[in-house]
Image (cartoon, rainbow, N blue to C red; front, side, top):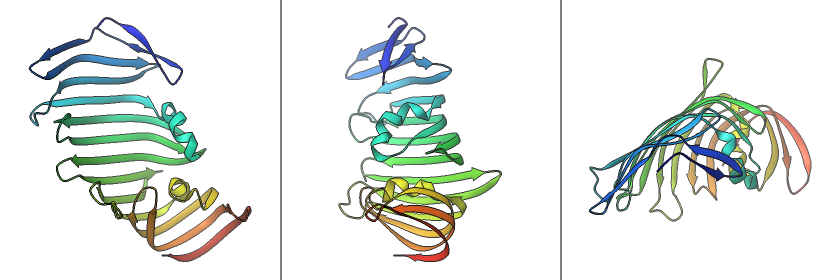
Length: 232
């Protein structure tokens, strides 16, 4: 493939260099794929096949999270920051396995600064388990640590994640409770257990709300809370 332009979400991206594609015995060989816009870069190199020994490597460099806003706006979420990191995907067309090491620099969610986010995840499509670990660092301090699993085989209890927060931004919970409350602001220190499903999560544990603002959707009434609460 020669250099060319593509339009994604009404933005013009360029396939920067000559891309080599080879099709052989049910495998697709990809070499030097580079998708580029305003210093944002996505590269792909490797092999797409059912063979677990064949790996496709993806690399993100200075990839702006605002690119995803058309997809996240329906959930009331606006993002900014830069995505950097690597993905390694094998056996793509059969029992997919994925390993990722991702960092988001200067994440901002709904105009609230969250900090730098590090995410590692490993997917085994045979067991349908995703192991996840996430850290958030803000002003040199760890404000959030989460670790656990996502089980795609389970119908009602896909999530099993332990979450510890230390004066973290409460806005990160907006996607999970958007049907109940809105206009989240302030901070929280907490030890929580997250179970259920992404669309119907269950949160249990204890939390200390620090100048936390929210609006109860049903009542249309804003509140500001400074108190320790039990979440169940």
